[in-house]
Amino acid sequence: MNAKVIGIFALLLALCGFLSIYTPESFLKGNNIENLLRRTSMYGILGIGVAFVIITSGIDLSVGSLVCLVGCLLASFLQVDYRPYDLYQVSAVNADQQSITLRGQADFDVGDPIRYYGGRRARNLVAQVTKVESVQLDDGTTASKLTIDQKPTRDDSDGNIAKLVSVVSYEKGDAGTSENKQLPEVNLGQALLKLAARDQVLFVHPTRGLKQLKIVDAGATDGQTAITVNDTLGDFGTEWFAVPLERRQRFPIPIALAMVLGIALFLGLLHGVLVTRLKLQPFVVTLCGLLFYRGFSRWMVDDQTMGFADEYDNSLRLLGTGKLQVWQAADGSDSFGIPYPFFVLLIVAIVAIIFLNRTVWGRYMLALGRNEEAARYSGINTNRVTMIAYVISAVLAAVGGMLFALDSNSISPSSFGNFYELYAIAAAVLGGCSLRGGEGGIVGVVIGTAVMQTLYNLIVLMKISDKLEFAIIGAVILLGVIADEVVKRFAAQRRAAARARQAAEE
Image (cartoon, rainbow, N blue to C red; front, top):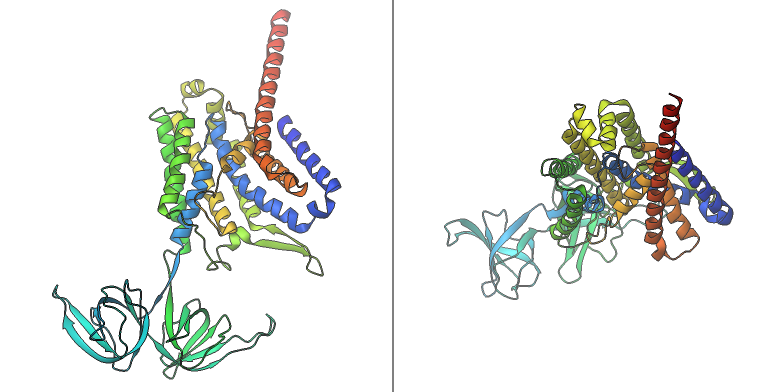
C-alpha cells in the first residue's frame, strides 16, 4: 500500500474509533455494521468502475443515471402479470339483448358462470350463460355470441370475459403461529392441470366483491382441483366463484440480467466511441448521458415507481438483501451477517486488482493516464484502452445498479441513483486516484468508499442534519483534490532537487 492508501485507511480507523467511543450503543450493533458493509459494497462497485475511467484521465458523470436506468430496465424485464387462464376479448356488449359477443371461437356451454370486466362504459358483472351461438362479424371473422341471465348496464365494445369455476368446498385453516399455522384450502369444481404454486386465484362474489390470493400448492384429482392459498379467506362460502390466474413473467431471470448487462456494455462502448472517435470531452459526453438516461428512464416507465413486489423475495432479491448469518442474540434483538453484496464486491475487487496490476491492459491504462501522447508513440492503442475503461465503468454501474434495485425494491425514476456518481468519484479520489490520471488503486477505492459510508453513518448516528450530507461530500472531494495537488507538487520538487544534486555531482 502506498502512502495515500495508508493515510485513508488511518482516517477510516479514526472515524470508526470516534463512533465506537461516542455512539457505542448504536455504531457497534451488528445490524448497523451489517448495513454499513452492505452500503459500502454497493457503492464500492460503482467506485471501482469510475476509478478505471479516472485512471485514464477521464471522468464518468453518468453513473447515477445509469443506475436508475438499470433499475427501471430490470424491474420492467422481470415484471410479472397474472391473467386468467380462460380469457376472451369482448367485441360487443348489447344491453337490450343481454348478449356479449366474443372474438374467435369461445369454449362455453349453457350454464357456465362468467365474469365481464374491463369495459369502458358497461359495469363489471357476474352472470350465467343461457345461450351460445356462432356469429360472423362485419370484418368476416367468426365470433361467439353469449346470451346471459343478467342485463349489462350499457352497450359497450370493449372488455374481457373470464370463465368462472365453482367452489365445491373449503377449509378456512387456523390462526396459529407461523410454524404450525394451517393454511386455507379450497376445492374447485374443475380439474385445472396447469394450475401450480406461485399462480394466483381471484375469488369473485356477485355482490360482495373480490379477493385475490396467492396459491401455495395445487393438485387436480377426480375432476376437481385442490388449492392451498397463502392468506385467510375471511367472509367466504360456496356461493363464491374462482378465476384461476396464470403467473406470466416477462423474461426469465438469466435473460433479464444478460440483457441489462448487454445494454450497459453498449452504452459504455458508446461513451468510449464518442470520446475517442469524435474527440468529445469526457465531461460533456457523460454529462449528456447523465441527463439522457434519467429522462429516458422517466419516460420509459411513465414516471411511475417500479419494483419487484414480493415476486423474487426468496430468489433473485436475496442477492441484494440476503446475508450469510454469523451471529444472532439469544433474544433476537440484534444480529450480524455478511451481506451478499460484500461477496460481489470481493469478486469484483479481486478481478479489478488482477486486471489493473497484473495484465498488460492495466499497465496501458496507467500509461495512458500519465501521458497519452507518450503512450501512443510507444505503440499503445489508446483509443481501445479508453473504450475498455468506459465499458468497465458502465458494466460495473449496471452490477451496482441491479444490487441497489434488488435491495430497495422501490425504484423512483426521478430520484433513484441521484448523485451516486459523486459518491463514486469521491471514493476514487479519496482512495488515491488522481483526477489528472495515471495513478490509483482498487484497494484505495474500496477504503475510500468505506470512509464515505462511515461519514454518512456518523451523520445519522450523531443526529447531524442530513442537509449537510452533500456539503460533506463536496468538502471531501475538495480536500482529496487539494491533497493530491500538494503531494504531486512536493514529489515534483523532490525530483527536481534530486536531479539538481546529481547534475552538481557530475
